[in-house]
Image (cartoon, rainbow, N blue to C red; front, side, top):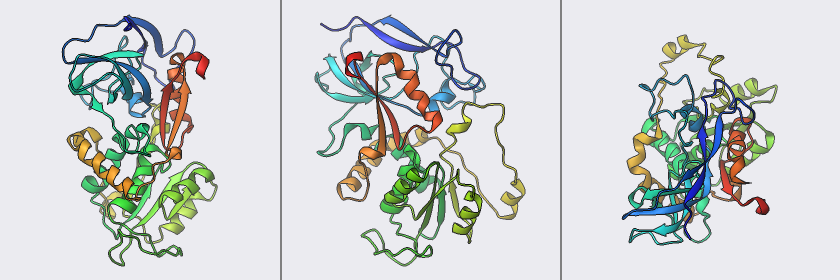
Length: 353
């Protein structure tokens, strides 16, 4: 029998700093809500996985001007917004059968009803876990590809430095720059390299990653970075200067999660004069500007994975088994560096954790 109610996490009050997960001032509130029956063209979905994204923090920020926000901010009483993967448990649409796995805006809701046209059915090729369609093959992959190809217009002769290179977006920036957009390995950092199928000439891109632990740095290098530096190392500044002796052409800043919970002490640019003297260009972008290309980019990345040019393994994502009541706690791992690659919540029953 189909459920008639669903548990949901709703925004209780907007946090001014780190979201509060317990006590009288908690940011979110666990509720039980009546569930509508699906109508013609709709399906009832049970949430299986939830995507955890830094952007979610901006949606609940009290300092965001709604007129400048790229999506409407959430208000107290709203169900927390989130992408996810769900299983269809009741269908009134001919194209989505019961048991189908779908990607959509599940929100922090145990069950939800959706127009079938708003969902994307998943049929991963053998050997590829469905969760990668929330990670490297989802919006993080789209973000990385769009930024490198359309915003940065990356060239083989560029030197690129990638912040948060062990994160969901950063790890795809490393791989797409090296293995999808035709860039080979740099020869100026004393590495030996036999050119692969994507190398076409002697002009090679240099790619330097930045991460927060030595373990993460070695992992980033395994993805294709020529060098990854630990920003917590006491010699980080001089190490970065040594690796970019001829300067960097691109600084890809996809790692600002640590600042999302501190609206008071935001660090600004202190060397704007050098922006002028060095003729620098700074561009911001939002991946939804390229959302119409999601399917073609996903298909392209799947082909690259099939050809062996992209690494999409278990260690490209951090999946945390979570009971529904602990959804906010798993999400909060984003702000403590508790993940390598994409951070995902897998909903489980209490006796299965």
